[in-house]
Length: 485
Image 1 (cartoon, rainbow, N blue to C red):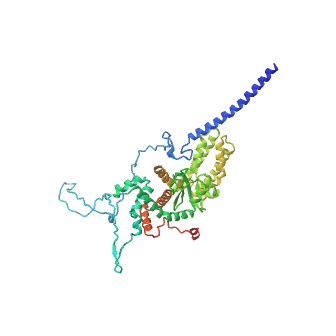
Image 2: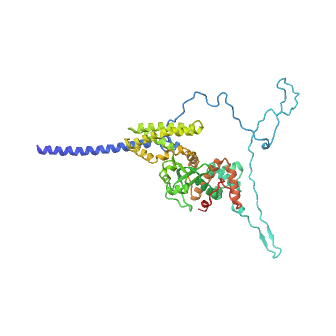
């Protein structure tokens, strides 16, 4: 009887140990299942994923209907195409009435009054302007021998002129056409036959011409008081020698300021790449929470509230008290944006906004402390603790004029790089990456200044071929010490 009792006790102990092990395993599987479900439900609204990755079945946040019909409303003043000035009109055709609209009489006389003007613009047929250089042979009057003239340097370097180079680079670098499509466009629009190799050669010539003004633009960006930084994935399949890299993974970085926007393609996403992009920048940096930006003091940073709101949406989708904390943070974020948009539109004074924010800030930070200390979800606790660690960087835009609460100024130009990546799948070599970053820098900087990209590229290529100084992207005086560095 005693042996049977001991056997049963041992069996109970074994079952209890097995039960504890199974409980731990169930808890691990539940945690893993929750994590996988969270990753599966990640969208552009609750994570850093781009909107293009959202499933087509995902409902979009639509505005409430105003009850009005689409298009212009009654009483709306119409917008019409502005007429070009008379000096820009190439041909004038006069339209004369053949009979009176009142009595049908055909006896009409001209009064010289213009009743209406309608302009029709047409694109002329374009033919390439071909210049043939002919080298002459001369006979020396002293020795009687023949001498052939030398080919001018700019003629020997390329069979295409500066504007042809500029058009090719504009199509591939600004319009993001593939080289083959750009080749077809050059042939159809301008009647110019060009091989794919010539398209690539034109790109590299333009890249060399833009090297100096882009380097100057980088120094200008580092002198600005506020900058926006962002990065996205890129591909570079080979190095300059054509050898395939072990990993094609690279990163496209952007640094946007009020005057210039600079792009860089780098192999990594770490401190070295950030330093290559921003150099000695000492202004206020607007960015997300990526760790490489922590080299800046929290008092000289502004975290993007659009990224924070997506994190708060993620909190609200989790179980337990994380949901309530996330919803409360979203409510405070929406209230902040409501006030900020009024400040931006001029309907709310900045001093009033700052007074409102003195009440909102402690509420937000208290919710983050609750999430860090009391939340039952480990990831929410970790995220709240990380945000609290960077808390001063949440409110820089409140005290500093010219600082935005979002990183939209950096993300908007980055879309150009994303579209380029989608059509070209990245770049092949280091020289290809340099062309990408320089063309993106030039096109975006000129767009900020309201200047024409094609005209600038043409002037830059002309100066490059004539061995003259390249026109600057932006007229900004750099301290002599910075230029020497």
